[in-house]
Length: 108
Image (cartoon, rainbow, N blue to C red):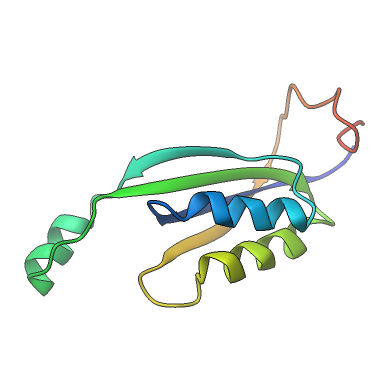
């Protein structure tokens, strides 16, 4: 059995394409991107008295355990995620995966 990680990144709208492009260069086979809206913006807007764009782009990448670190590092660099307010990135373990058995590198 192989181990898979899911890399989840939430970035400012308009940054996902660049982040995914660099992830692919680092070994990601693909990504799923979609729009989202956080619940913390209202509180931040009231507190800071500035306009904050409420939409975010979310990126999901499934990758083998031995490849996730290089991909994640490339995503952090491309999205400038170490700078405050640019987004977040984290991983979660994947269990009970169905549907990738036909992909090279994801065979059991």
